[in-house]
Image (tube, rainbow, N blue to C red; front, side, top):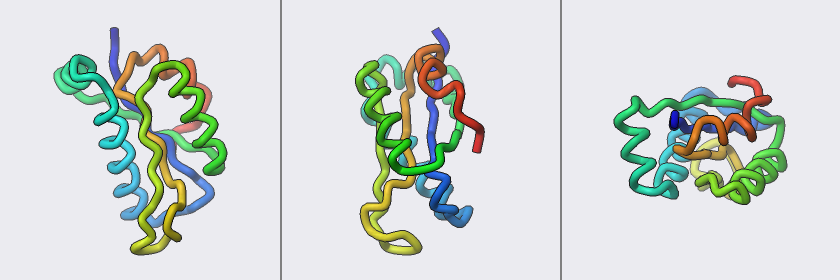
Length: 114
């Protein structure tokens, strides 16, 4: 079983590169912490594969989170603290996994790369 992580970005925000990088990191860590220890260990030993994708809006992220959660995929939805360029509570990114790559692809496979 191949294991990977997917991070999905809210494209409507047009975040500066540094802000985007920080939000993607938050989403990666938040979802990682929701995964089980055996999956986290497997992912770590297999090279920590990550893919960063995009959706048009925060509503798309929320719908994706609901679908992934119902499939048993660990998720981490990031809401910005509002300390720099975004308003507090702005939904920026969603982390999915680490989890079985085929199951993630079934949910995110049609989304475009960032």
